[in-house]
Picture 1 (tube, rainbow, N blue to C red):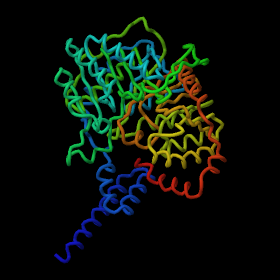
Picture 2: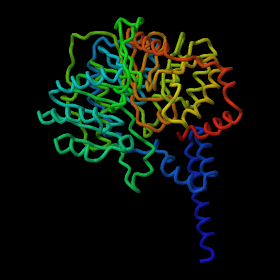
Picture 3: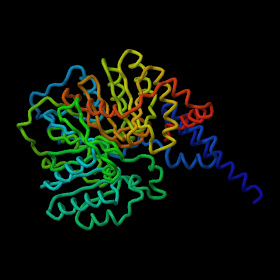
Picture 4: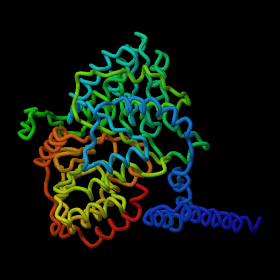
Length: 489
């Protein structure tokens, strides 16, 4: 018994060494490897627990067989092949091929896009589309709160289920951690198929708690689709609203939601097939049911003929490559005139940081919009060290002052834009299951640019000298220390 503490210490040291060896042999980015080594070495016991919960690498795991993926992709491939007069923009041909080759994100034309910057209008439109559903409703969301809006949405889905409409819902187990089981049981009892994504069950799935489904997708009858950054929660419709002119857009006016700003898209046309595929892949993940029937890919309105091309790109920690991150890097480096980006959290991976600095130093107008105050203090501290680095490279940083801007969008050269659930941070690029619509269309890009520029009117430009002057030595030291752990935040 006298040596029991030495035995415990020996086993603990062996566990730390084994974890460090695993991290090193995973061939992760050096910054992330060093962050985990520091955690394991300098946080006794806590470091091992953090690694067990958040550090295990799933990118090489085959959670969905290739045969199943082929079956789930087959129908969207057939619909893609049936497109006539498909023209790919030459300047983005390599980007389109990149997404197609890596994740079968097929480009579809003949699309119409509505941009929502206000939860009131978004959820009004979504509830209207749900009320018109005749065949199926597929909803995939990170947060589905048991609040006024959540119950309104649940009631609308239950009403359609009672009419015989197929309703399937996926919610993230961690995103809905505080939501009671009875909220989802009520929907199940009324005929809705509801699944939690990667429920955290001790000890079986504890190591997967770090890998969350952050997507916000809805598909109605295979004809209308939604994708963007808004969850189902009243925070998106609470707070002061005001009507402001949007001079740079033919829409005339928009409603600004002061408390919580976000951006979401409503899509009709060929790319809804891409949204449908993304949902059905997730559904197979949670339900192990292959849904491949043609009725989930109905013919859309043939009168909607245009060259608005969209790819629905999904990325995940079980994909061979970080698809959306690679797309961002290529877009930034390929830009000739400008790249405008908005993200609520800015903890960029090294490739994205390198691309931003390179583009800005090469004369491209690179602008980054982030909230002046975030809802995550540690992230805000870690972000500041990255901001000083891009400011030195002449990137223009805009601090959004009118509430919390949760938008995740990018627009470049009046031709390409993207919007979805992906933040410019390690977690979105490497750990989360994310989804973005990449849109190759001048009209949509100019509307997205107008949204960015209107938000810019409510921003303060961060000056490099004042940013450094306002920070004391201890603040900068603290921010630098927190930055070491940014791959884990």
